[in-house]
Amino acid sequence: MIDLGLDLLFWCTLYVVLLLVVGTMGRQARRDESLRDYFLAGRSMGFGVLVLTFFATQYSGNSLSGFPGQVYREGLAYFMTVTFMIGIVLGYTFFAPRLYALSRAKDYLTPTDFLDDRFRSPALNYLSAAIFAWALLNFLLAQLTALGLALAAFTHGDIPYRAGVVGGGLIVLTYVLLGGMRAVAWTDTLQGALLIVGLLFILGLIWVEVGSPASVGRTLQLLQPDSVANPSLNLCLVWISNFLLLTFGAPLYPQAIQRIYAAKRLRQLRNALAIMAVIPLFAVTVVILIGAAGIALFPQLDRIDPDQVTFRVVSYLVESNALAYYPALMVMMAVVAAIMSTADSCLLTLSSICTKDFAARLKGYTAEQAERLVKWAPLFSVAAMVLIVGLAIQPRTTIWGLLVIKFEVLIQLSPAFVFGTLHGHDHPAAYTVRDILAGLWTGLLLILALYVGGYFVELDSLFGLHFGTVGVAVNYLVVVGHRLLRLRAMNNRK
Figure 1 (spheres, rainbow, N blue to C red):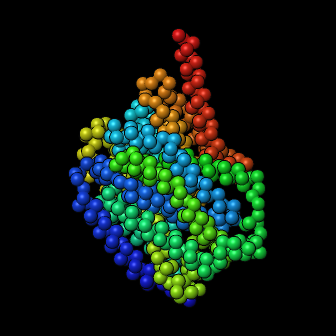
Figure 2 (cartoon, one colour):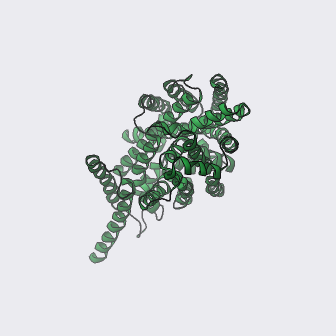
Figure 3 (cartoon, rainbow, N blue to C red):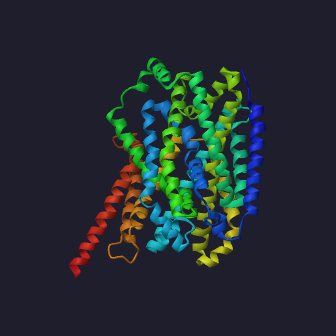
């Protein structure tokens, strides 16, 4: 058996050194010690950096570990993941251009700054900041879990899972502390390019060593006919639910919203999102093929192990063909890069929310006074990383499970951004904070009730629809209904 553990460790070490160099360069390039420069890179991201940082952030441990694992569990029906990722870009179009214009005019720093400016409600500010923080902690946990699994699988245990989690967390924390958003964006550019090359390599290796997509499909038909069967009605509803979760939820990633703020020009942001709409046709197809190859090669894995399908497939390719050694090494580096590029974004944005949305507001600081807290940001980053590393040491659910839980809560903020960017707060047709809070609380309480009830009757969805999807549908209906009743009452008083 070919063991590339030492080589992977060597190249990972060089890669880490390069990341730290980039982090140092990001620190040296800082124009001042402001929160804006540290968290938004001075709003200077151009087209190329935007494309690669969106790509590196969107295609993460969830994509390269969670999606193949879900294909392994559910079969080729999860090819509809392609539509999920395209749907994410559609979701941005509902509010991103208007939000960008507002962020330039109002100098927003965190996602909650928009809500504060638009609705002027401390209750909504704290609730939304808590939801964003929850999503980021969840996302960061998924990345460190995927990183530990990747390094353990790639090195056949030479780098234990826990060592991968702790070491990866320390590395990400270090270069985030060094350079802030500028370092994160530059390292994302490097990691995004490496990921594209790695996906090309893995496509070629699977084609040569396992077979063409058609050949893999025929193998699945023989080994596990259910994995290539026509989807049931229930599974179609799962598709719809997942599509809605990602279309309305992923554009609300706090780190993605900060990239909207950080764009240099609106035209460059639009062009970057247009490119991101095309990328899934390639990237997700390769990810799905990895999961299918996993079914063909390893038909018997337990519930948690499917999250290791990507890593097992790549290791198999190396062991089957010595010529695949260095291409596979590139793939492994790309997987590690994808995971780290998302982890760094989560950590930085979480730090900004703790600094600006919690610490500054609790102290009653103005925007100018909040600049004093820039030195607190590293402390929040350290505290968050310690917490997440502690949770990731012993994984308790699948990476896909973490993805779903995160979106079910995050998606409840969708009406606030979609309706909130339609009008200013003083417009007669504008949605008010009472409209938004009525829907938000209804959606959150409904999810909680469904989860509690589902626990006792062993139910995790409603006819294939995630609890969060049901919650956000009711959320939107309540927001619109509350507004109509409010306007009717105002007209009656006149």
